[in-house]
Length: 533
Image (spheres, rainbow, N blue to C red):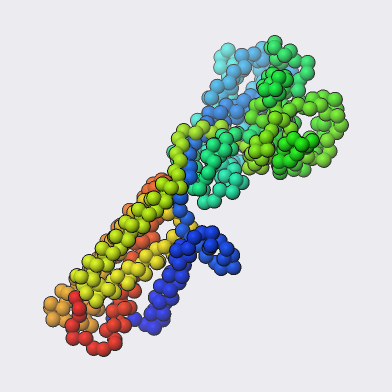
């Protein structure tokens, strides 16, 4: 153990020097560091509690997704029954399935075939998405001739899970579009999303952006429908934005979607006649469908529907062949920008409800940073003083290794772009106390060897060799607990676990390798008859 090859000495020195260089950028303001675009530098990201910002807990209303999926199956079934001219009644839908009864016994077999076809189609779609065998849709017929399409619980669970996963991705896109740096967006439980936005200065706007479902659709207006009476099948009445300015209160809109927002490839705020509008552009498939529909329906009104509200309903004067258009309405400059943003990011599969909102001011975050610095400094100085008083020169070696350990820890956080939180600072303070544990074990073992009459060289060798297993065992058990906290914890727990895990690894390196190298170099300067312990 007392012999250290030259290559290992060089490697230890290089690691120490590189760690110091990597942690140095954290000593300078971020604005100054960002100017050094030619230099590869990274800083530790500050969490919400240190930098200030907003914390939102969102709930995905997955029941709306289930309802929408079942209504889609219902519309497909209704369309096929009409195409085959099968009269039916008692058509009902609930979260567990759809049921109907053919009015003509002679058409029951054909109706059953249609129901099985709808079930196979949805089962195939579920399998194609990797949902598994438990999502198979089945059909059955009761004694009174009622045909039922059963939606299994497994498929409903997958719909809900998929909606939350997709919502997280859409939320991430919308947040990224605003330019917010270093956000934290993660799932909590089955249907909730945590959004932490450090440095955010307008939380209300962010809530509006995240709360807008942004489901865009282009559908035809049914002019012949009664404005107040019952509507024919396949038609619904939707409110209009013009109602706010004294215009039409609502319009009868055909449920059939000509083109949906899924076909949008771009949306940008713009101006037309001095008023804010939103211009959009379709992909090739959407442009073709839009061109065909507009060419075949010149003179007819089509509605631009956003989140089940008619934004505008212009008349088609001529075929629209360019694959682009604009949405006009009662927009302000900011609302036009926000609408373009959410359309670019994509529609949420389900509405989001804000369950919890917390805001942290930058002043409070700065106070936390100062308190963390003070606690770290006190802990650092206290540990160094204890080691120097109790172990003398070897305590100074341990103190130098502690500085190297702190540099390694900050360098690791910088490279990983880990987010430092107030619990993370607590993890650093705890790590500094734990960092000298290994040195204490080694030094105490050396003292025991000296009492037994060993030479300094033999005492040093035995101290490192015999304490090594104990050091590994104690640090490994703590590391396992920290890793489990990181993977199963959330929010502040993760920050604490991250700094603790990195600190354990760096402290083992500094205690075993760095202090040993200093002691070996000191011992080789001249022969020693005893050790200053």
